[in-house]
Length: 347
Image 1 (cartoon, one colour):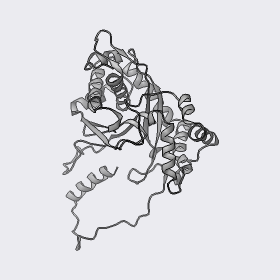
Image 2 (cartoon, rainbow, N blue to C red; image 1 turned 45 degrees about the vertical axis):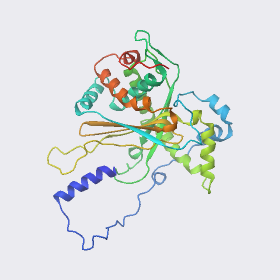
Image 3 (cartoon, rainbow, N blue to C red; image 1 turned 135 degrees about the vertical axis):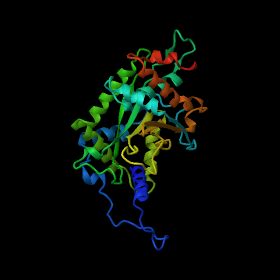
Image 4 (cartoon, rainbow, N blue to C red; image 1 turned 90 degrees about the horizontal axis):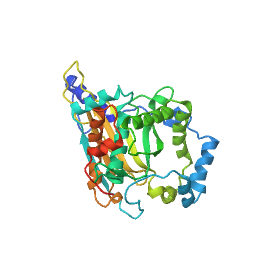
């Protein structure tokens, strides 16, 4: 939102120049109070059931038992290590306007969205690059590994009254889609519909919204004494599968920053690049997407220590692009179909 406000302000100054300050060293400041926190706007208190569940899984159970009870998921070639330096690697992909329009147009007849198409493309791409053997084109193979997918969710419109778009603050929660299976016969569009249904359940039902708010409310129960936060995070890290909570964490800012059609502007966003550094324990990959002026941009970040080399990780976004564009041309498109166009790679 800050970047959108910045562009609007720059264009406003062009059309409505303000007198320069007599002292350019003095920067005008606002006297407006800070906006209320999420906890002041909505009831985020976790239920007793939620507290008991989190206490049992996160604190009471020993790491081996906790991992045994959870759904298994792939989270990179190399497990996270507390001793490895935290270095972020990144890759970037900007689709052309024609490619973006093609993907947007394909979503409607398939009763899905660009967001869910990105999900399916990422799952297909990861399974193809890291967990499949395509050296035999007539008989490709893939492992039984499953994925865990974390989705960032904006809470601004889920509270009453809705939070103003320009109110600065952390109004984000997330939900996790677990046990995502990609087999040779898995349908791209079927996978999109499955993920779309999970989004609806998490964001448009009373129980789903309650869980999103409770997720934020749990922060109140984290330790606040000096050094306790670090100890808590290390303890959580040791109990995670592979030292990571999920396979992927995905944030999509959606469509914004479009150039007005009724007037000329001096500034506009050509490529809406949105990126976040790789997380220590959240996920193997962090995908971010944003769209402006019919241009979809995707970024991908990961910890350097997650893989021996960056070769395959660098190819993830290019594979996602190929898979999405191929899917738009076919009524039925399976993972096996996507492997036909993949670069041969052995497990």
